[in-house]
Image 1 (cartoon, helix red, strand yellow):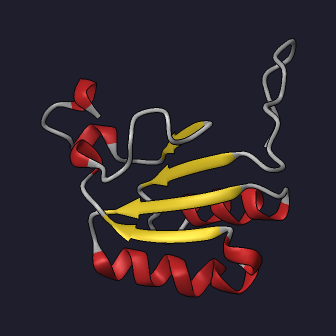
Image 2 (cartoon, rainbow, N blue to C red):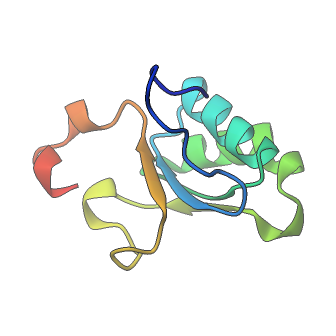
Length: 102
């Protein structure tokens, strides 16, 4: 998870990250990489099967309550504004009716 040349990499260890659109591929890889680097992750997907698949794929890495899964609509997330240090949106915006609101 590098940054473009000249950019500063975000502090990952101890940060709180919301990951939306976990799908069975790249979203789960990002969650796994964030957990390996010490982040606390909240994962939200509209699909219960995707949430279950994500939990099964990376759940073993979630020691100490650092991984939380939620079935949630990205346009109506159940979290307060500012609750996360970073939000990672993977393959979701193109499916939203109002992506600017998300």
